[in-house]
Structures are given as structure tokens and as C-alpha cells.
Length: 188
Image (cartoon, rainbow, N blue to C red):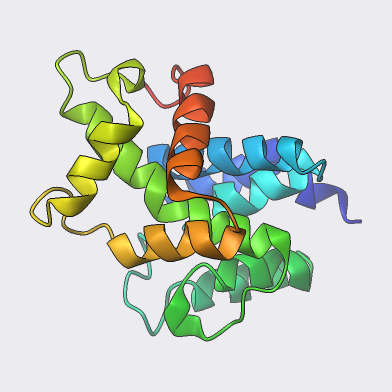
């Protein structure tokens, strides 16, 4: 396996090269945290899975439209020698790419992407703006409020848990716990 696929410093440098927005970087970290936690749970390659999550949106700031993201990112990663499993996992996180989610990594990335962002949004409206104050019941309540974090695709959250084969409440709690353990990394 190509060492750069497991080298977080290298992947982080790519993220910083293409993503200047602090909020988008924090989203990458939040998704990475959740996916890494699942990699541990499933006894998978934590570094590889984490780097896929870290780079899943690295091209979004420069190429924010559906006809470009994540396709441009896939082209960049191919040129840099990333393998097709890594690239396909990233491509599969967006339904409109039509790349099927077949591997556990693909399903995990999809399941964690929108949820990590939503949990972060829930933390930001808490009195102390910390993930320590976020509970499953409050996340479920906010999911029903279409005006809250309106850019988050609720169907992706529900479908992600379903595709991963976990109960939504368990998935939410798992991601909350992972984010709590790493809250300083994402300033939550």
C-alpha cells in the first residue's frame, strides 16, 4: 500500500493546500474523527480510513458545484498516486456521483459525513458551544426542524445509518462520543 495513503501529515497538507475555510477544515476533522472511531470498532485500518475522511471534501472549496465536486478531487488524488479504493470511497460519499457504496469504508464515510456536520451545528447552539452538551434526543429533535442547519441533508443521515446497518440513535451516540473524545481538535 502506498505510504501516503496512511500518512496523515501528507493528507493534512493536501487539505490545507486546497481548503482555506476554517469551518470546512473543521468539518473534515469531525468526519475524520467519526470515521476513525468506526475503523477502530470494525478493526480496520484507522489511518487509511481517517485519511479518506479527512480528504472527502478537500476539493469542495475550489470546486463547489455537483459537476465538479468530488470529481476534480478524484482527478487530483489520481495524479498524486492515491489508489482507486481511496478515491472511490470519496466519490461514493455523494449520491449524485452514482458510485455505489459497497465497502464498509464507503458506507461509513457516507454515514458520518452529514451527521458529523449536524452534531457540530447542534453543539454551536448550546449555551457553552460544546459537544459535551449535545445529547441524542436533542439531535433527533433538531433533525425534525427543517429550518435548523437547512443545508444538511436529513435523508443522508437516515440513509447513512441504514446503509451502515446501525440504529440511528446508536449511530448518533457513537459519533457524539467520538467527537467528545476529540473535541479540542475541532474546538467543540
